[in-house]
Amino acid sequence: MGIFDALNTSVGGLQAQSFALQNISGNIANASTVGYKGIGTSFEDLVPAAAATNRQNSAGVTAHSQATITTKGTVSRSSVSTNMAIVGDGFFNVQKPVGITDNIPVFNGVTNYTRRGDFQLNANGNLVNGAGYYLLGVTVDPKTGNPTGNVPKVLQFQNNFIPAQATTSINYAANLPTKPATVASTTATAGGLKAYGGLDPSDFSAGFNPLVIGTPAPPFTDATTSGSTVNNKQATQISGATLLSGAASTDSIITNFAAGDTITVNGTPITFVASGAVGNQLNVTDSVSTMLAKIDSITGATTASSVTNGIITLHTGTASNLTISSSNATAFAALGFASPTTQARGGGGTVGAGVVIGNDIKVFTNESISGGAVTAYDATGTPVNLQLRWAKVDSSSLGSPHVDTWNLFYQANSSATGTQTAWINAGTNFRFSASGALTSPSGSSISLPGVTVDGQSLGTQTFNFGSGGLTQYASTGGTATINNIFQNGYAAGQLQSIAVNNSGLVVGTFSNGQNLNLAAVSLSHFNGTNYLKALDGGAYAATDESGVAIAGATGTINGSALEGSNTDIADEFTKLIVTQQAYSANTKVITTANSMVQDLLNVLR
Image 1: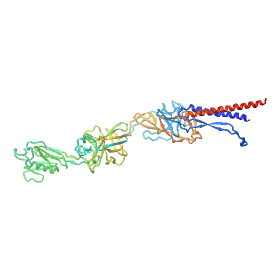
Image 2: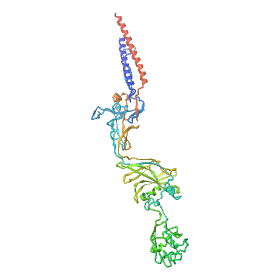
Image 3: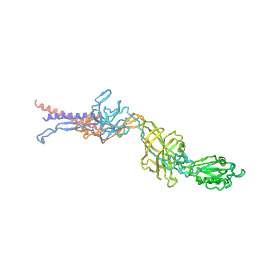
Image 4: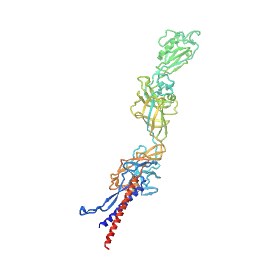
């Protein structure tokens, strides 16, 4: 019986090696198949039963397939933006349609698993790989970036349309120069704030201090008004010689003030009397210098009004604007003034109004620097050009207790005139230390309530400058260096193309220029990966031995990449040689056994 057993064993050996050859040929054939996992062959010896161990002998062999699913293939770059490869553990979740109805694929709900990532967009907007499997994933809200569910489904991206998103926040980063190069700074008096590139509120219309609302008004300054040259005054003032009355040929005015005449200064009358003037009275024989001193005592001017070369110059003082008139207009005109005469004092104004009006646009532009611009969007997706400017409102160069302080403005009306609001102060004093770091405000953002530009409402905006986003360092050009300016709004748009990024997100490019996340590709893994059942097209089905699919995986997705076959041609050729030799050896055993059987049969002849 041993000879016949040897024949059967050799036949089993031939079958086992044929099985191995089949696996080798399949591996070689799929050497270029995307995501293919080679199948190895393991041999199992079959030992016949024996009454005693010393009677055991070698017997047959059987062959089994040995999966190499856990062995990864080489990942290479792809020019197709929807191709993807898994680096590490994990499988794509896919489904294959069981039919087509009205050109729409019909699925039975059974999920398979694959590492073949050559997905491309088909006519229906599905991502389908080269073997016809449809990719599953979780859709993402393009506005919030949050998943809209947690159950993977067949992804579809067909004519996706996103509505407009209104701007709600602006991210901003910039360096402000220590000394702004404003137009006004080139002609300003040395030593003042304007000379250091700052903004002087006294240059703006009365009642429209552009600084932060509530900022104390700047102090008033003395101003002057001068009359015209009149012929009755000598060329050089002689104290006490120019009289208020007298003969025409003397050093006096042509038309005399008479007793009972008045000059009213800021509502306080000065009355002329023949003699013995007291309080707010003047003798008709007093000098012009005496009259000017009386006027100054009412206005509170610390710089005396004067007469030089026949011209009287009056000082307003700082207490109020100057208003002066006379009951004897003719005599008053002989002094070189019309009745009434008014002159506003300098500086002052109101407490910070926080706006720049149309009449002050030129002044504001000359005393501030550009802060850049950003296109924002209202609720309908209409673009709005939001212009920014920075004005330095205090400078440490003026000495203690002055601190480098800036105000931010945005343009509210590009065609403002008169008292219409042109620019609005953001309402915050941005203060910087000597090292250029922002010290106030302490947070990383401010709120701009009710922003409206040229009649288009943007609502409340959050102005984010982050930590270290605003600095004040020296700048050779004296301009603001805008490092970042970005807003979160956009117009409505239609999907143009999609791509998969390295985070496993499907990103859509829309006609409005936005790149938004549309879906997250789902991955799964198994405890018994190598016990999955292989299907056509590089897909696998779960088995009892593999266990059920577990959502998630430790592997990561690489976009625009493909995982190749894990087959090693050199290794397969080596196996092929060994298999061929083993097969030939088994045939030799059969030949030998056959010869022995013939010898046995010959004994009977």
